[in-house]
Amino acid sequence: MTTTIRTAITDADYEAWRAVRIAVLPYERCPSVAEMRELDRPGRLTLLAEIDGTVVGSGLADRSGDGQRASLMPRVHPDHRRRGVGTELLRALADHGLAQGYDMAGTNVDDEGSRLFAERFGFKEANREVEQVRPIGDEPWPAAPTEYEIVSVAERPELWTAAYHQVAVPTIPDMDHSAALQVSLSDWEKEWINDPAAMFVAVAGDEVIGVAGLKLDSDRPERAEVGYTAVRREWRGKSVASTLKRTSMAWAADHGITEIYTWTQRGNESMRRLNEHLGFTYGIVSLTMRAPLPLTEQPSEAR
Image (cartoon, rainbow, N blue to C red; front, side, top):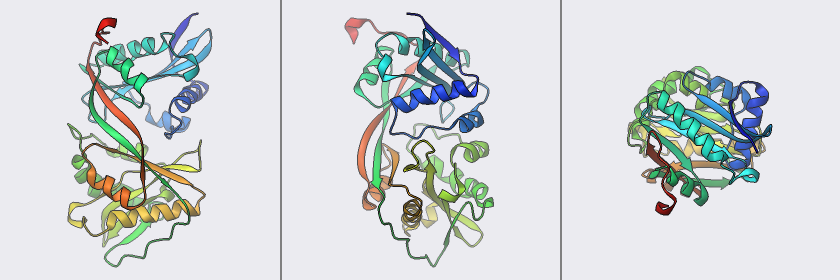
């Protein structure tokens, strides 16, 4: 058995990478090949692992959201685990992160086996997120607010850039992270929206005061991920977020979506409570783990 680790280059490579990710994380939206191409940038590394020519694993190394760590994501197809593939992928990704100048690495794990694997290499829990899920049925459109209006980004595309400056920039630091996420306008336009018709903004006069919506899934069109939801501080407590979310839920019902989901990190109790109020229930817990670079594999007796 020969394992080969190589860089994904062609569209076929990217589709093979996606196939592994979908098999490992069937409950999460996977970027399309076109989206992955859009996300390509210096320092980002996309890997495939093959055994005798068959793709059995994938990997991604990129900068973390706050730019302070290497984000490492090794994944092995469930049918090909316990053959050392994950270890080879992780080492290749960690070496790349080290070469990019990082002295810390981060990863996310959603199951006990993955947690134990990460701990073998010195990763420790730093935060956790919980999935919240909401079935979509017959969803009524909310009453039109009087102090502001709700419009889709498809109706007024220029508002997405305005939303970045007027909502995202002042509210992203409110997220419960040890360091604020670093989100450029380019990131906002590429990663935080994928269908303008499914993303909504609240507008008061000529100011954007809130955003919420959905990121659609071309692999599972019946399911959608809740996009970034935020309201400017001076407008909080006026049901803006609730109205935006109810609007997106009604839109989902009209477009054949039967389930939506979101992830909320530890410390974001206000959003969790809002989601609970809107009928969301709890699902998977995902751990954010960190380790110093270079990675050191722990002796078996220490595990």
